[in-house]
Image (cartoon, rainbow, N blue to C red):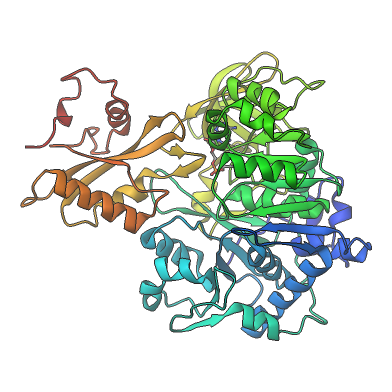
Length: 571
Ligand code: PRX
């Protein structure tokens, strides 16, 4: 894909980057920074990955072994003709192949595009097309469930490499190859790292917008500089740490802090593929001697429900730092961390677009100031509260407005695919506009208030209502759909849909069940609405845009009878 460059390395290399630089002047490659340089420095014997598979399966991979796996992967991709700048999509759970895949992709100068496993066939196809992926590396079951039936329509996809999800040889569908067999046959000797520079495209994640298609958000190799730097500032990580990030592959947190930052720091990364389950998670923290842990408020709330006493029975854990991201962290959760885990939970704020943590609440002498606040910008980050005015912005010193981050910095995204106009629309007067509403107090602490737009946040996952609405309208019964978040004590919000029907379809339990099943199958568990409400008409602005804030009030059950007249159930 043709992408804008963000300039020569000198323009984007902050202080400290020299340690990550490639072997020749001007080179920077994430795989070199994360693996090869540790091996060259004689640290190849240290444990890079501690993989905890299902049941009792587990295995440690040293940096030497991980380097060899990356070389084999790079050899396979080169053999298949993958060119620098080409996108390789990866649809895998958290396992060794996810890491080998990403590192091999960066090694050949290609772009790593992780996809979220809980998406259904509709969103998956759209993302593969938007990414212009030429190769897909996938778990065999995930591929069979979400891609296989539409393979013939994905004309740009030249190769599909499958991994057996149960550790066995992959169950191959037509036109697919067994990745493990290719890796075993590949020659890892003499594989060169492509001489990428800091501004070259390396990573593509999808974020959702309130309108339009999902945004293929691209980061450059230079992102590793800020990701390592911020991991040091927030977690204080060194090669002695055991780092565990619970984020799902497909989201920026997994790539930045589940893969790149801790490997660049030379520490041991815990790789675990389960959902939050208190007893298992506490035993991982204790048995693997995790020292730094990055998770979500939803996970913390789940642990809180099982009680501090259970957490304490797993003491003495070795945790030094716990942090969360993705949704507001309530003060009770911060303090519960102190009580149950021995350390407060630090809130951190950032977005896919910023590429690295920008705001964090780092304790002062062990105590978190202002629990409930996201904290203050990290050193080197310039943040502001702004009001949009005309084509520009006006900064507000103290008070409420939109959070803005100064443009530039090595982790800031370099494009939405090659849609330059869409990228530029996020910037004004040298600021990146985040779309989050915040309050800044007199001490410079930032407090999250909500989104300025209609995005939903379900368990830390951003969902664009437009994508869900479009897919619901693919069902023959649905004339129009409006999707909003309903408050949820665990997930923060869950998506709910309001629909009007086409003539000839009957409102009723049977149709509701059919629509819910359709949504779950097509959209996947993470995006499908939990409820469908039938309405006679959707509330709209004069220009015909759906008034989602009215639907939101209705979904939250806060409307008095008759207040939203348009929303009386249809027929
Ligand atoms: O609304 C904010 C919320 O998550 C959004 C970014 O989502 P995404 O691009 O998927 O990246 C998630 C993780 C980096 C933000 O615009 N968000 C993120 N952190 C916080 C938060 N909301 C409240 N408090 C936070 N600490």
